[in-house]
Image (cartoon, rainbow, N blue to C red):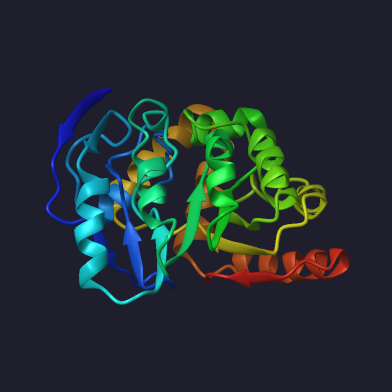
Length: 264
């Protein structure tokens, strides 16, 4: 892992992801999720998951940025995980939250790490919500597609603690990996329901560029060779797979009284 400390000129950016702003304390992400489309959106040439830039002056820059913008909702983070492993050392996300604590800004955090529990007492005092991304409870699949993340069970337990502490929570079930994420679909959603999230987001696998698919295909060929052709049909031809998944998820969520929202 190549780690570089950098200085940023601004840290609060306008967002088009359903919030007013976004904050990304790091560039790059140590979680190294295979399906992540961020490097293709950013047109990053370095190998994703093998570098990370630490914006060491981000908390101080945020103080200045907040004075320039009207109050709104801030998403932490859109192109990195705010609780990636380096957060243990640098504590940028925590220091940013401390700067936001007594402001009129509301916060939406999304992560794949139970490290967020470190800041639970701080989050309880803020206008915030915390979401956990979970794609499967199959640990083999999780390790293949999300090699450096907390286990899905740890994430679920963390979300339960957050909810019990009075913090609004959500689950991001996505991307739904064809024939992997929907394995034992009812049991997966039953586990979601057990921690009483305020709502669930569901998204499909979005392929951004040919290089993106090439990376994913290589992983499939090594670990799930029988799925390669099936994924190609699902992702690149109209076969109705994700529509059928949507209908099934709606049915199961309704049976458990879960609020849901699809991103596709």
